[in-house]
Amino acid sequence: MKYVLMYTSRPDLEAAVPPERQAEVYQQIFAWFERHGASFVDAGAELQGVETATTVKAPAEGGDPVVVDGPFTEAKEMIGGFSVIDVPDLDAALAMAREWPPLIFPGVAVEVRPIVDHGAM
Amino acid sequence: MSDTESTDLPDSRLAEVVRRESGLIVAALTRDLRNFDLAEEAVAEAVAKALVGWRSTGVPDRPGAWLTTVARRYAVDRLRSPVSTRVVLTGDPDAAPEPSWSEPTSAIRGDDRVAMLFGCCHPSLAVEARLALTLRAVLGVTTAQIAAAFLQPEPTIAQRIVRAKRKIVANGIALAVPDSDLAARLHDVLTVVLLAYNARFLEPADPAPGPHPRADRLTEDAIWLAGLIATELPHEPEAMGLLALLMLHESRAAARFAPHGRLILLADQDRGRWDHPTIARAERLLERAALYRRPGRFQLMAAIAACHASAPSTEETDWLQVLTLYDLLLTHDPSPVVRLNHAIALAEVLGPEAGLSELDSLGDSLAAYHLFHAARADLLRRCGRLDDARIADQRALDLTTNAAERNLLTDRLTSAL
Image 1: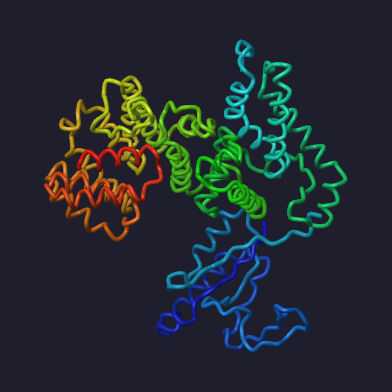
Image 2: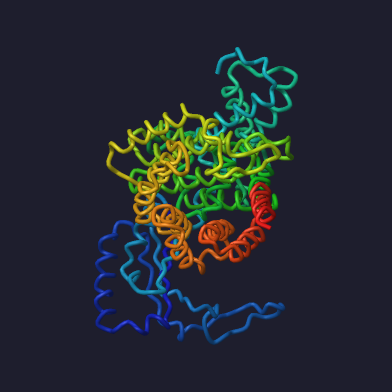
């Protein structure tokens, strides 16, 4: 089964973490990617900060798409990156997500979503 | 299944067959078709056909096999029909994927119904979704009956079940007893079975014919399921613990209600009406569980129930033992409700003032829980604070929706005048 892992965090809470602590966890993230190397279909990408985002949006009232300076949602949580994995089942995906090193920080979350398998048609 | 009972009324016989077989058939079909939704729909269809057909033909000799055959035929027809081909091609989420008749990749251990139960109680599903899906898919309870048991609108329950099934299918959640993390997963399963039991726990055991007779059988279904789990996972002491707990609750069922559905509290029950052979069996089961030396929440709850069940009266209850067990239970489950019960036991050991001061520390988290106010009223009365007790009883009454409990509290308030 293929799933996307979406790594999310709360930038407001993240700012309180000391830089040396962040560097340490960064090392652990590399180790985590190495440890689970065989499970990645696509290691994905780490995204630049949410302040760099631009969104193209369909207005709720209809009409032409508009370009908005900022992320697609005003939520406090932001997506910091994503990966595509292929593992036997959801339990395996959740076990992998549970080990995501930044989860020691408050507000960090990993969303696990199965992907639509167009190959089955 | 023997044919000696085929003279029974088809409806009651069908209810029994559905309970024993439907989870098994759904699990087997799901394994073959790799489509939980379709398997469940097919079994529901077969049950509907049986309801109509068995009235005129009588119950077949092997009702389970009959249901399996009809369900399988329905599923295969559905997969072959042009409608399902079309939805497969358009990628509709409701669509059934191509059937796969290949062997499952890993053998499912034990009874398929238990495997199914683990899938339905997967931690990725919300607890209320686990419960609704378990009742529907493992026990064959209808959506309308589930809605009635939980006082929820039927569309809410239907939506919850559909969503849970879709999530299981979309995520490829295995309908299997897990290889890893068994203790935590089993705990989730046992919790759902206990919730199913408790849903009707406060209703009279022998009620006047009500609008939802099937819902009254949830307790029976839950005990049956607990027995199945304990049989299929014979070395899991927590499974034995839950079965013992439910047996102990059930042993008091006859004494719990007076005529007209009046609730009788443990202290006032006629202990001669308890089912003592069942109590003895539950105690033996707990002793066997204890040999594994892996205590847990369900064994401790059962051990507490056993203390009450073996006491000749409230006064002669070994309250020190009860209190010690609650101390242990708190290490597994530090929830406010357990702390409430701990405070009640403390009051019996150290006096009502001690219990009351522990209770008052729980006021914030349990302010909306009627039994908190009822327990507080009892301790206040024993401390001689009658006016405060009356206020607490009134608060409890305002928060209670259960008819039997309302009657009890009303009696208490009027007799105190």
